[in-house]
Image 1 (cartoon, rainbow, N blue to C red):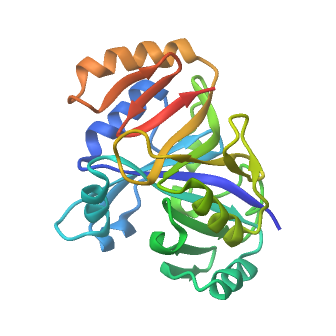
Image 2 (cartoon, rainbow, N blue to C red):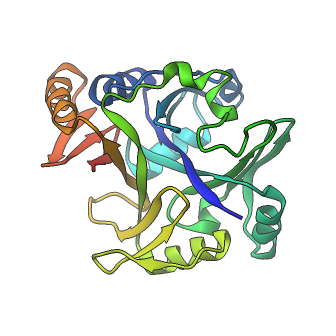
Length: 264
């Protein structure tokens, strides 16, 4: 029974500037806008990153869960770590055994999803989903949230995937143990000695909060083929887009929509 990192979600006060920043800096394209998220008072955009995805969501009305998350974390930033499993029922049973609540739990003809309550997981929203039907288990197979033709939006000239997600927490070790219990994967250590989970195609690291923001999804590692092009585009976007949308935060790192992108 495997688990892959398939999608990372950001939440932003306004969709357009963060979406534009991702297009300009990472050279990606929008493959889908899901009309179903309007039910939750949101609008969104899905952008392929190799065979994984970035999603940006933004509230369209007052009183949404996304809006409350923005308030809690003090602005735009990482929102959800969304994983794909090859066998959903045992994942559901495990969550029930541990007493972890679900925020949203649904079965569709081609897709099953289970979004876990962050108060029960710690760190960030964790979602475990299953793609059903023909080629559903393929590494670059269909992915319901990304629409019926996501490969039409795939661009590989600057980035080819997401190799890690970084969860910041007040007690990284405790949150790491909780996630490990839920996904039934043994923790290992990073080179720096911190805890991490090794999924089939990526890692999830757990680190202390050091950026002045509360716990949440703080950053991702992006596999890139044109790092210099990304950094040059980030410099241009930093002055062209609304203040704070894009920032250079290191020799190989940029901040887009409040999420750290480490270029590997």
